[in-house]
Structures are given as structure tokens and as C-alpha cells.
Length: 196
Image (cartoon, rainbow, N blue to C red; front, side, top):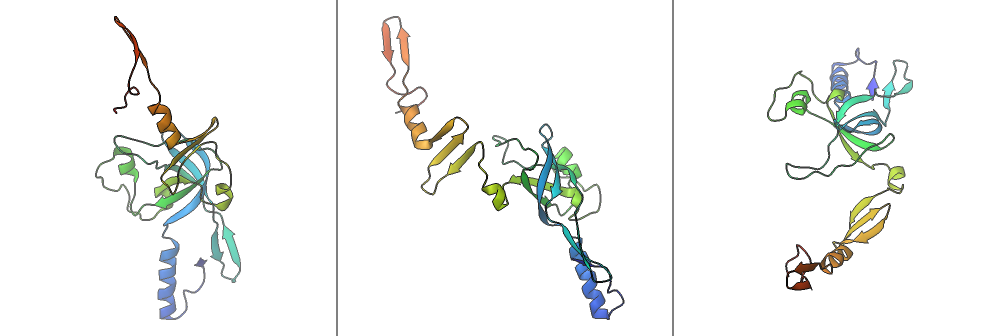
């Protein structure tokens, strides 16, 4: 919340206004709505989903929409050996975190870098985490999902149907191969690639 007036008040009030102004300009994180997704670069354009509350000099309250965030890197779980990735579309939700420092050099080059500009918690240094944050989105049925139950079962849901990890294990462990040799044909005693 930003109050435009109040800079001619008492000294304590002026200090309080300065602190409030600094906090107002410090960005931490905000839910956003995806407007477009660049799959090649893993970036999104997204609209902050909560308007800013402004108090004008005459005391009236105004709600202002924050600007569109562009070229925001998207974070998917991953490492040098594995990555979990999925596509995003317009109106999907994400949570955008704002870096302490400028991320430009690190994003382009990786490793240890110096910031290109002296800025902190800036709208231009967002990092998007795809999610279904609002209750409305969480109530919508997804096309595919992987769910880990409280009992440790893994449930795979897709447009073709659903199965769980126990069913998958039984399918793999009951699947045998016929081997043809010069002396005849026989079935393997264990599934291909599964040791007894």
C-alpha cells in the first residue's frame, strides 16, 4: 500500500513513511497468470494476478494492475542427470519469485557471475514456478498427473487411463520373453532386465 501524502508530518512519521516506501518497492513473490510460453527458451510472459493498492493524496483508494512480466525464466525440477518438464499454456498459473540481485548474467551464462545492474527485488528479475495455486485451478481436472499417495503408491493418470505402481510392477514382473536358440525355443525364467 502506497500513501502519496505524509512527507510533511512529524520526524517519526517521515521515517515511518520512508520505511513503508522501501517495503512497498521491495518485491518478494506474487501469483501470476501465464499469457504466453516460449518452450524453446523455457520463459513466460505472465500477468501479476493481484492488483496494487494505492492511497491517493485525497485519501481515495485506487487499485492498479502491475505491468506484464516478460522473458521470465521458468523453473522445472531438474539436475545434470534428470529433468521433469511439461508444457504451459495461456491462463495457467505460476508463482513468480523476485531475486535479491539481477539474474541476467547467471541466467545466460550460469556459474558464478556479477550482476549487470545494481537492483534488488526488482520486477525484471522474476523466476516463475508453474503451479495450480488458486482453488479454482486446483478444482479443474488435468489431462495427466502423477500422484504419490499417503501409502506410498504412485498413481499415473493420463488421457488413455490410469494405473498404479503396484500394477506396473506386476506387469513388468509377469512379462517373459521367448528365446530361440539352435537347440530350440524356451521362455526366460525372469522378465527381461529384472533379476530374481
